[in-house]
Image 1 (cartoon, rainbow, N blue to C red):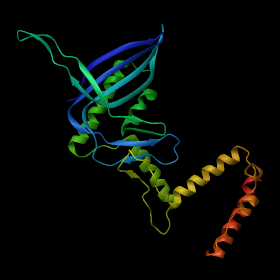
Image 2 (image 1 turned 30 degrees about the vertical axis):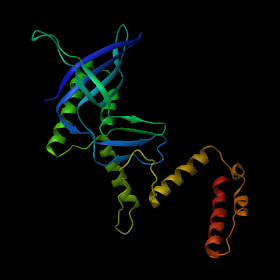
Image 3 (image 1 turned 120 degrees about the vertical axis):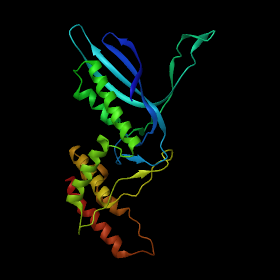
Length: 264
């Protein structure tokens, strides 16, 4: 059974209060994670096992309030490593229960990437869809959702996250529009060692997508052929080694010339 162990709150300014809830799902579960890239150049990456394990989650809510109303300004949930300090006892009598302390958060953020629980986006949506609801009602709904997720993981039939559902729909759409001769390539990437920079080969569909986005942005910015010195100057700098396929190089030059219309 999933329970709230504690609720701490602190006023951070005139109109905002920060609430912190420690949630216990009863037993340790695997925390599957996803890596997202700041500039969204590559799709998000689902990390491979082994996954970290925990039974504790911290729910943080930033609440806005004034004289007449209040609403949820921000909300997120993070898997954490927590423990309870020993009770204060005297002659075998408990004088004070030990405080709960969060020792670590299963979350990592750098200048370019963010690694978080695969269900994080499910709870980000609560700040939008339930912003005007009473705080205790929102907390109850979140605890219920965490309990559903934990129960599904324990049963071996994990319910998909919002992110996974979105990816499935996107891949189905891409398969319907991009597949040729009835052959569909699964583009879902999985990274085993997140501590190393990802270097991945792009499929044809990924390259085309990136090219389309780059060209769209250049046109929107009003770029012209003179912005980059012109394709003719690029062509003039092409060096053809002695041992090479002349036909291939000529085809490359013609391709560069054909791209000139994009900047007219």
